[in-house]
Length: 227
Ligand code: C5P
Image: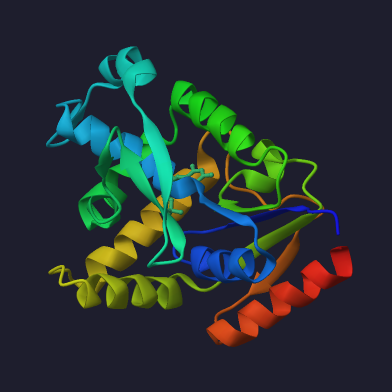
């Protein structure tokens, strides 16, 4: 059976990656978390002094972009690929609220987007792929056979993210997580380069009241119709 490209876009913490991972596993496809790549560049910028307190040296970061090596390595035990900066696994480090608070600013930089979009297109070449992000159905794979746009209320999404962070042992306050989700929604939707918008041919799923299993089944059904 021929393989297709599945693009899953949507606002922060809509649970895109959970469903995308399950679908990729079910179909034997590659899963790519494009947000992890923007987070990895943000982490690099923080580590290398380009983001310091609230000062952001965009030109400095852009001048070093060609040296930044972001890659994925499949973790057999977990069943999905983890993100690396050079040879270092940074899967945990990129999920902090601190990285979340800068990542949408980094994602406004056209040079960053250009570099990552190229890499994302390569990762999805010649194979079945499920990729989640903000511009996958509009910019990275405008010809994707199946495009899904996930939504849920900001409060539902913040609660999910808050629970995840607490579960990992991070000390966070719900109101800060909600503010971060709302700020990222705003920045992602209003940036000049590749803003978050639903592709005309994307199918919208509001998962505020859906269980993970229900979301999985819904997407799988759409895949079956598309194949
Ligand atoms: O998906 P995740 O929440 O990890 O993404 C982090 C941030 O990376 C988003 O808020 C957005 O600013 C940026 N992003 C993007 N384009 C993508 C994926 C993520 O601009 N395709």
